[in-house]
Amino acid sequence: MHGLLVVFLASAVLLGALLVVACVVPPPLSLDQPDAGPNAPPIIVAASDTAAQPLRPPGTVTVNVLDTTGELSFQLYDVDVADTLYVRLYVDYDPAAPLGARSECHAEPSVEQSTTRTAACRSAPLCLESDVGSTHRLEADVSDRDVVEGSVSHRDVEPPGLVSTWTLDLVCVSVQP
Image 1 (cartoon, rainbow, N blue to C red):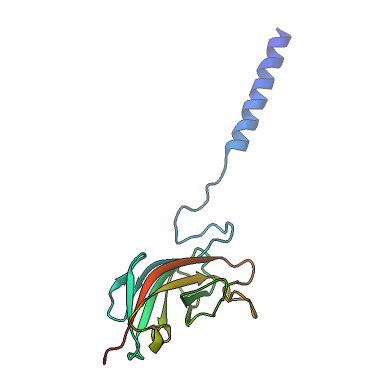
Image 2 (spheres, rainbow, N blue to C red):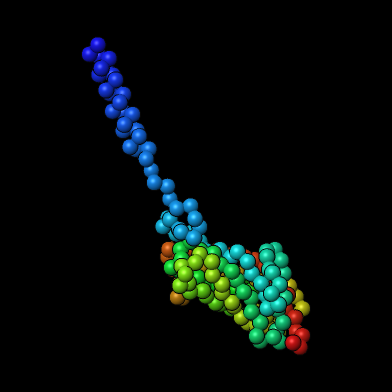
């Protein structure tokens, strides 16, 4: 009888310990309330040109070299609501002969601490007169840190920064606006 009592008490203690360990508070499930997990890369969720035409990979964006007021607008998403987001636009980027971004813009953290923000980059610098008449590759990088000063690649971001990229075809035209 004594052995049965010991087994019963040991089972009760073990069951109690399992119940205490199993009581876990779940993380927030809302995307508007990040869980302070590891750093995550920001992403482009939507883009549009000056005429509000939506852009999406593997699509094409047309830029008029004579339109000095044109913009590409990027809707950005980042769970790290306190980060400034940087957008850099590279044309025909070649890692063997890297050149810097032709256009840059950024989105500051919002007062509302929103995970979604918008950045508008000038489109005029994307096309040179020599680019008219041919198709080019446009890479839009979004990062949560600035580019490292003096970076040979012109794309390395300060640690622990992360980058995501959209790639589009770029057609440069020369038409009076």
